[in-house]
Amino acid sequence: MVEYLFTSPLKESDVRKLRVRDIVYVSGNVFTARDEAHHRALKWAEDGKKLPINLTGLPMYHCGPLARKDDGTWNIISAGPTTSSRMELYESDFIKQFEIPMIVGKGGMGQRTTEAMMNHGAVYAAFPGGTGALAAQSIIGVEKVFWLDLGMPEALWYLRVEHFGPLTIAIDSHGNNLYDSLYEEFKVNIAELKQKM
Amino acid sequence: MNTNDLGEVVERATKKLLELAVIELPIGVENALRGALKKEQNLIAKAQLTSMIENIEIARSKRLPICQDTGIQMFHITLGEDFPVKSKLQKIVQRSVQKATSEIPLRPNAVHPITRVNSSDNTGIHVPYIEWCIQPGTKMNIEVIPKGFGSENMSRLRMLSPGQGMKAVKEFLLDSVLEAGGKNCPPTIIGLGLGLGVDGVMRLGRKAALRPLPLRNEHPEIADLEAELLRLVNETGIGPMGLGGKTTALAVNIELGHTHTASLPVAVVFQCWAARRSEANIYSNGCVEFVSHEVKEW
Image (cartoon, rainbow over all chains, first blue to last red; front, side, top):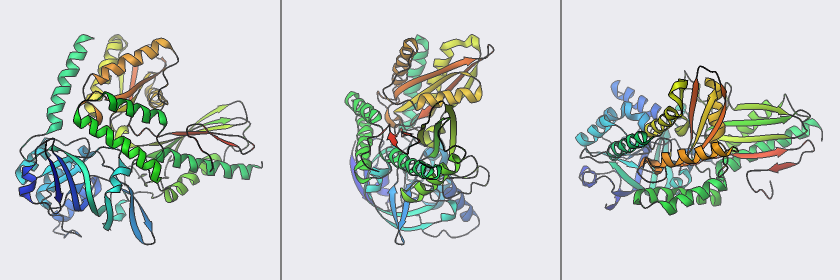
């Protein structure tokens, strides 16, 4: 287990260093995207429409922040991760299309995402679920928010973060998926528990 | 107190309850998380629990919602039949939710299920969701549950055959816990509903998931079963956030009702570790007694 401090935009050479169970802290710009923003971004790309910002090299945070506008400025109040598995549907295409080097979320992702991460040099990092107040402490500003018509949680928030973490690498760019290997262990444990009943 | 003034008290108290619920985790849950941290040896498990506890402290001291998912707001209202405000309560609760959304703030989560358009104020068709109960007396009791949907999405229903018995109930529980993995933000509180029909068993499961820690079922034999199932769930090794460890659940709570002779309905309802709730009694003279939280001034 190694600890890293990275500044975004991330370089593929940095991302390739990471292995599951490593700990990362990120500073710089990140953006949020949930189901609806994934759907729209991919639709726009398919239609040849340019996205409002260039996402290349930016960590993507699976998060629907709770934000408040004070005197015309957005402030992030609470912003923990959302369940990443819902985005499995889009993620391999998304990583490839927009060259996303890191995804931060909770609960893990599946086989297709793991393969895309191996092919395109990306990692998945877990942030503890439910810790919205803690996460908000390292979000130091909202650069801009796009697609608010999707609703506050589903909009694309372009954020500035400082020392955002600890992020636990749970899928690396070498085909290792911590959730998958743990799932196999849990399955064996449960089979044994059932046998004892 | 006249009914208009009393209505205003109810509205203000409800907004306060929403604030307390989303910002201050019940002490029973916090204690259980601290207890879990002492037991864990796995480094990743310890890190998850440490962050959760740190988060609880930050939320409390900076008055921030613990989790950005402030949920779909659910209310359980037990209304005294002689409490003067009755039919207006639905509108009053709705207004409290709208005000809480902009002032606390709460994240606007309510969307139309087909168009997915967000109503922007947490209200909509049947939302906020209120369950009613009437009892003798002049007070109303109101319980507020900002229910996050990371855990809600993993809740499960199974209509078992009577012949499959309790062994199948336990297997279904373990399968549901495995399927949820880290997605429901473990360590969870698991509500196990047994009996009634499809809707009733989910309500029983929900009631069980919302029971304050560390209360056990009032029947000793069911309380023993709760303890046995908690051991079973924690032996899966799934752990905090599904990253491995000894604490997959903080409690397994059971609520049951009689059912049809042809069925064995089972509900597994998950409540995430950020198991937020608040409760108060409101009296017809306008006095408000906060039950779940210590409130000096409001």
